[in-house]
Length: 189
Image 1: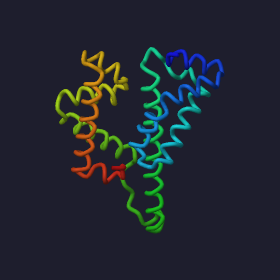
Image 2 (image 1 turned 120 degrees about the vertical axis):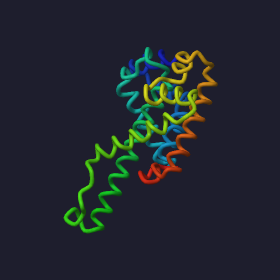
Image 3 (image 1 turned 120 degrees about the horizontal axis):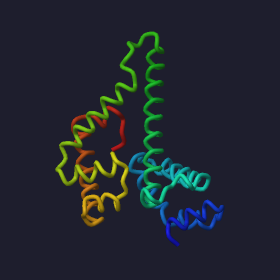
């Protein structure tokens, strides 16, 4: 059964189709969540949430935009990043309260301004990647294309594209930790 057929069956409220989709894609989806969250339990919660959303809203997946696997990975990545952001915000609130509340704290920049500065810095670091890695990372993470779509756009084998994306993300990770950006924002290593 193809992924498109599975989603159609899920839309028809056939639980065995969800079980099949889970068996087919949960492991790789868990890996995506774990890379962002580090914590195995939190990653498992994200996977469960992603598949519950697939069950409740199967038509949010559009097979014309890419593979189900890529869509599930995108959902897991997005939810995981949201969890990290919430955790960072919680820690900042607790630190403010520990220092005596907001009355004695000099106000900092608006969170949106800080996020935009961080995003601009990440884009600058991405621009420093080797061209073949930069292009693959840009298409996958900034444009939201699946590996298969990136391979088609670059007219390269899918395995080559995956290797370039992995190498680019490792290099990006190392660069952001080397300049202190990732550590300063409490991103998991």
